[in-house]
Length: 140
Image (cartoon, rainbow, N blue to C red):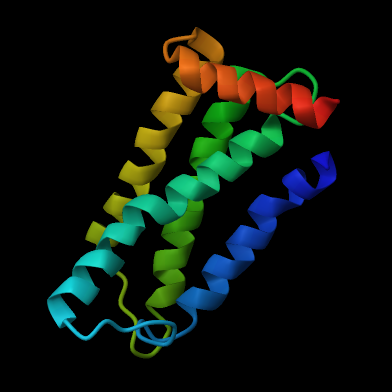
């Protein structure tokens, strides 16, 4: 199971790349344009936060998971957000903006704050409990 968890971030990054290669309305387009735009813009906050979570969970499958790894995962998720925005600038019917990159970054920073401090500083006991149980489960 730990090997599946380790490859999930890569699979997710490939999915992001594929979806970024398609027009914004290729997968779904809501009838109300304002709602459609709002939801898709809000997803920037979530999309790269999920990537960080997957990287963090993959990190928990290794012995000696250290705080520096959490910071490296933050950097990887943020950098991939930048790469994704650059990629989108070359895709017809897509756009790349600094605002989108800022939203990607904010999503990563918010979720990393909670996960990092829960696991390493025990600030969020319920989340820490979930992470510790997950770590025990994957390490068997």
